Image (tube, rainbow, N blue to C red):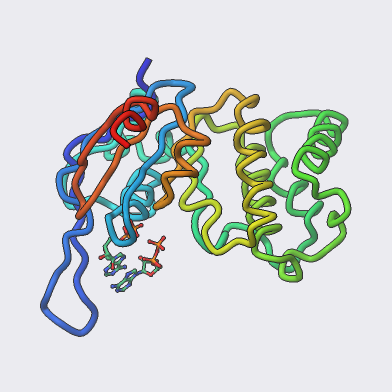
Length: 233
Ligand code: ADP
Ligand code: ADP
């Protein structure tokens, strides 16, 4: 069952202070089924981030469409977006002057749950993400890796069906990167979400994904199960 349909998406940027343009995404199409973990693999500059930002509504495409759970992003933007959480570079959605626990409490609000359920959900996440020791730490005092873990935990609190992760281990120390991959593999999988992960690292995709869409120069090069791609190497 299809949950994301990306159809003929294109996006061109204007270069700053010049008339030149760059086509970051050039007629990209792919679909994602419910429950799948799909990798967007490609070198730096391939158009992965732009594709993710188009899917999570941070950018508007020049042409093409995104459907989320059968809802058109163009026609019913808010309703389509309610099914998506994104963990993007820089984690600008976190509250830098609140603690780890306060961020989790903030993002678990307004969902019509009892405070007891919320409290136990937060305990579970602090445990699973190994953030218990950091719960009273301000976010701006955390390492990038810890911030990334918190951003992923927050994305699970939103109850959205689809989670987008843009280069989740890029620029993060080796140990925390390993821990994040383990969390994505073992914890996030149990949350019954559909996940799209962008990475330039085949190892990350191989470890975490069922299928990978390879993009280069803004175009889809291959779309296949990871096991089939590995046969090529
Ligand atoms: P990736 O995530 O695969 O590294 P991006 O989607 O970030 O690729 O970038 C694709 C291309 O678009 C690159 O050439 C990049 O420099 C360019 N680009 C991305 N964002 C902007 C922007 N805001 N303005 C101009 N060019 C951009
Ligand atoms: P990523 O590593 O995720 O591909 P980048 O490092 O390419 O992201 O981009 C970081 C930020 O700078 C993004 O907001 C992107 O849109 C913007 N950006 C990227 N390339 C350019 C560019 N050539 N000109 C202007 N902004 C850019």
